[in-house]
Length: 506
Image 1 (cartoon, one colour):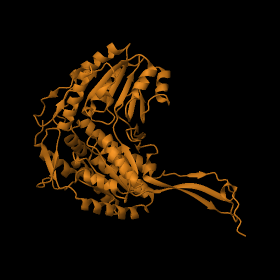
Image 2 (cartoon, helix red, strand yellow):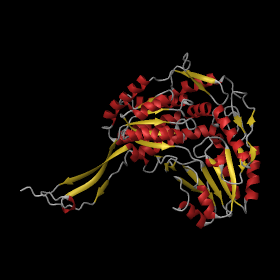
Image 3 (cartoon, helix red, strand yellow):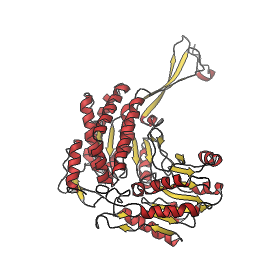
Image 4 (cartoon, one colour):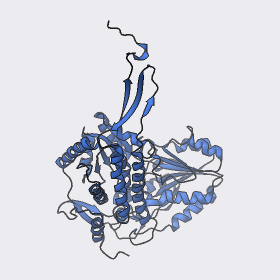
């Protein structure tokens, strides 16, 4: 049970993180918690002029930060990781307050920030180029990587801090300042994280002003980042609709984009699958974070030979899963972010019923009154993949369909716009290898015997098609935050030209 008003808990949590922003600005931007539906703060949003000044500050910071040796830049990120460890409980609670996540999921998101900081610290000594074989004697050819410039980060409500850090930790060790425009639904988490980052800067001692800044407000601030030629890279997480706006605008000015957009992720359960393992993985993948993950499992294809064994067990799991206030109960499923999400879920279920779907669950739960939106996750048995199954609804709906032919189910799996995450449950080597091959899943993430959610920071995160094609986090995603130069050095006394060209001027 909560022992203090939610607004007071919010203020105390922010204070513990070191955030000193005024939380009660008359006529300001209201910040609502999905946990109870109440307004927990009102903030003063940035103006267009304020955004411009922040961009100018970041440009000035870049001119200094790009000259700092990369391992030294990594030291700042190391200190930030230490501060995140100290603030982990408070930051996790802030995520629960603003995004409605369970305590373990809130803490898990903060852990992702810590993990990517550890990754980036090592990366600061591994920003490798190549030595390339040259056809000209007495020459050496190589490539080098240099800091790119100011990075604008636009984040979504469902992960209010981890994706920022996937970008920021890499950008900072690569030599780039960052400007963060968080979702207007979750700005307090951003302010808390920024305050923790400021503690690391204070310990670092000689960082330029404006290495990391937060812009609080609505879409106009995102437009300021998107439109500014001073912002070299825009990394935007959100809907495909948002990506269709951001991508062309940045491309029109020849800027760079990383787009992490919609998913509509699917799983396939084959006859040889370990059914107990599949049941657990599907349940978390489909119901975790109340279905509000970009990697949430939304479609499930089950082989006809095991359908009657697995699906009734899933229906039972859906009926028994606990739904409740993440701050005062041990419930596994928290609230939807707002009324619009609840309305969208209801509309999708109505469409599914009209197409012959059988709906299990989906009813609103009386957890915190009329201002909060808690629902039972819905499992929908569909006769075919049609209507709402083909589009992503950001809510806990899992559409389940039978299949009989493996080649046909691969085609059905890929027959949607999104291409983020996917999984197959099988112990058949041929099926799993086919799923991971060019013939198989067309997603950026393809898993075997685990669900679609829960990516680790060591791998590059992102997807194909309407997911945007961008990559963040691990592997070689760091290259997006740097510019490449190919260098040729002539240490001979001759001037041989490439391709054997002759150009004798006397």
